[in-house]
Amino acid sequence: MSTSRRPTMIGNALAQVGAAGLFLFSILAAIPKSLRHFRETLRQIWFVGAMSLVIIMTCGLFVGMVLSLQLYYTLAKFGGTAALGTVVALSLFRELGPVVTALLFAGRAGTSMTAEIGLMRATDQLSAMEMMAVDPLAYVVAPRFLAGIVAMPLLACVFNALGILGAHLVGVSWLGLDNGTFWGNMTSNVDVWNDLVNGVWKSTAFGAVIALIATFEGYTTAPTSEGVAYATTRTVVASSIVVLALDFVMTAFLM
Amino acid sequence: MTQPRRSFQVGTGLFILLGFAALAYLATQTTSVANYTQGDYYTLNAKFSNIGQLKQRAPVKLAGVRIGSVQSIELDPQSLEALVKIGIDTRFTDIPDDSGAAIFTSGLLGDQYVGVQPGGSPLAFKDGDEFILTQSSMQLEDLIGKFLVSGDSPKKPANSDSPTTDDTDPSSK
Image 1 (cartoon, each protein chain N blue to C red):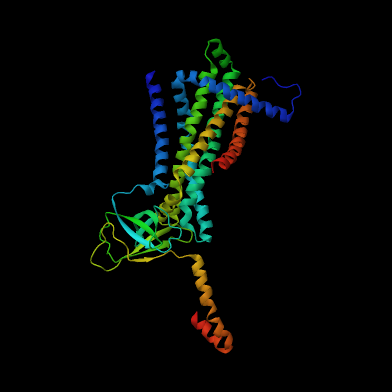
Image 2: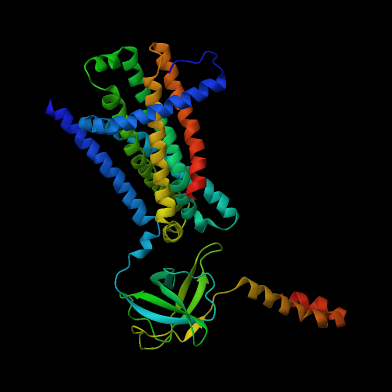
């Protein structure tokens, strides 16, 4: 992981990507060993998933509400308000649910992973673990990676459910759309596998990518307080870009 | 020492449970799975000369209320018409046997459904009966064709005597 003799922008970025790829392989190799510390994985799911529930639920509710409000006025121009439930459900399940949850997850959980591991690096806790023959990849990194993969799709599902409830609240209770029309059109046009489960796959991939970036940035941070600050910022920036780019690629393949 | 550990394990379990509950709720309530769940039903047949975009599991409605769904759509080889098998929920047993079936579109962009127009017969439909009166789905091309044909015919006499057209056209509207 030593820097090249002539560091250029593109060369550096490529080196980062390559190092992250190698890091992914070493995490995957450490996963069997990390199952011995299964309680640590559970604790991370609790910290990364359950503690994010409040922000995910609130945002899901408001995203669903504003989606319903905007689409109602747009669809009303074409006399197609009956399609409100369908459009809200499809856009939530296919796009907004996984992507917005991933962006929130990167801000809420990714940063704390980076800061925690980065501070462990800065205070030589990771070296101390190695001295005690505890593999930090198996004890620190792999549980967080697994927790990201497990928690992200569950959070996206909660986000979707709250979004639908918010859309129902605005569309039916406030704007007066017929309840049966809302659900009936939705159930006849939304498919489980093509729409709902594809979104779950997407969010699983986003969870893996965010957890990989967050742990990688923390693990390879410069061991100073400034380095930890930079690493945390880079986690959010890189996660957001990669999530949005990966979203396009996955949509193109999963459609 | 065991107390805090136990509490986060319970919390993690609850979180995972909540996530799967949300997934199950979405799958069963907001997707097409919701239409699969149907209780006991009895089957009625209806023949249409054109079913348009009618699909399997499309709703069957009476007075706007969903009473069943389309079970299967086949081509009847003898009459060369579409044979639609309709499953009616056993709760609705008192549908007169001279009722009609028509294919409608819900809204402008909505899906097509079978609408049952109740008749006046004292006898009710039984399992395996057939609708005598059916009305096929409206085809946009047919409607345009009819409009063009009916739009042509008044024009030809209108061209022959020009002063009367000004009187007849507003009255026909």
